[in-house]
Length: 198
Image (cartoon, rainbow, N blue to C red; front, side):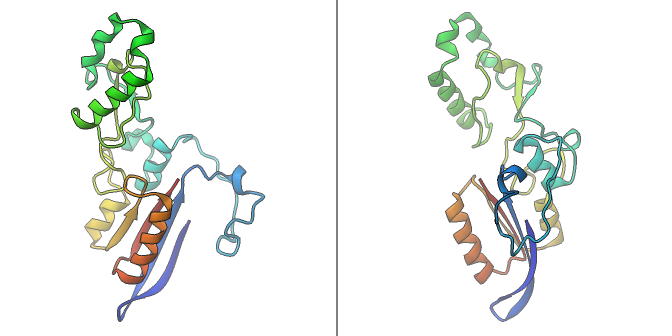
């Protein structure tokens, strides 16, 4: 949902754009609901080949396809440059021991804190297979330079000198996001607001 309006900040009028993205809120969920009918008078289903947020959201933020921005799935096949080469020795251990939630938790923490995989890194792949893969989302995609393969709306806002605020689950829960956004709408000079709700 994107809305434009004129708002007051102190004594200065400003044009405000508000973009709210509700992850996984598909047409089948809301087609028979009266969800924001008064604001969203035009509604229809959207067909996409981008089935996962890991590719769809970078495409929305950049206006590029996954083949251009490089985000399709969080893990991608890259045995030559895999940062998980250190896990190759695990293939010698029993599968029940290695592909276990405790070992996945240890790998997650090592990836986040020692291998600079970023705060959102999770061990979704069997540890014995990880040496064949790389991880694409090393930075927060809701910040400038967060998408390595293409500039996003946040890069464009910075380049254009447009003050903005972006809120996501990387820092807050939905309730906190809505509270912060309302406060910043009323009291900041920001002109563009991006809220990701999950």
